[in-house]
Length: 242
Image 1: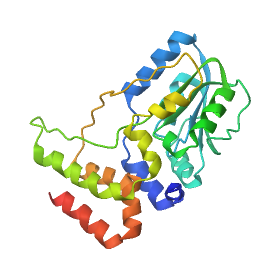
Image 2 (image 1 turned 90 degrees about the vertical axis):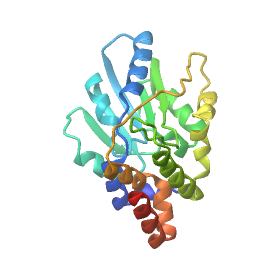
Image 3 (image 1 turned 180 degrees about the vertical axis):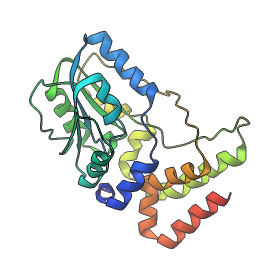
C-alpha cells in the first residue's frame, strides 16, 4: 500500500494546491441521475476518500449537510483550512467503516478514491448508509493526459508520455481499476439500477507551472521522489525545460 503518502503534510499541501479540481461534467451526470430517482431537497451527502475536499465543497450548495470522510488527518486538515462553509464537516474514518447510520444519506460520492479502498467492503457500506433511492457515485480520471494547444502538438504530448512511462514504475497495483475505467467497481455493485458511463470529456486550461504542479501531486511521482530524490527532481526539471 502507498496510502501512507496521503498522511504526509507536505504531500497533502501539494495535492491540495495542484490536483485537478472537481469536474462540472461529472457533477452534472450525478445530479441528472439523482433527479430521476428522487425529488429535492437533498438532505445529506457523504464524500468518501474526500482528501482535501475537491468534491466535498462543490457538493455543499446542493445539500443541507455534507460530510467529508478520509483516513488521512493531514488531508482533512488541508480541507478544513480552505472550507468556509457551515454545512460541511469532516471526519477521520475508513471508507469501509463509515460513521453514519443506516439509510441516512442521499448521496455517497467517491471521486478519484475507490482504487484505494477494499471495493467490496466499501460498496456494502455505501449501500448500508444510503436512503431508498439514494445514489452511489464512484468516478475517476484516466491515468493518461493529452495536452492540446490548438495544434495538438506531438512534442507536447510526448512530454506527457515520458512522464507517465517513468512514474508508472511506481504504480500501485489497484491502479488497474483506473486503467479499466472502474469496470470492476461497477460490477461489484449488487444493484440492478446502475449505470457505467465512460470517456466523459473534461478539458482544463493549464500553464506550464500548473502542469508541473500536477505532475508533483500524483502519488506515483511522490513514490519516485522517495525512492531517488535527486533523480526525481532532475527528471521533473528536464520535463519543465522541454
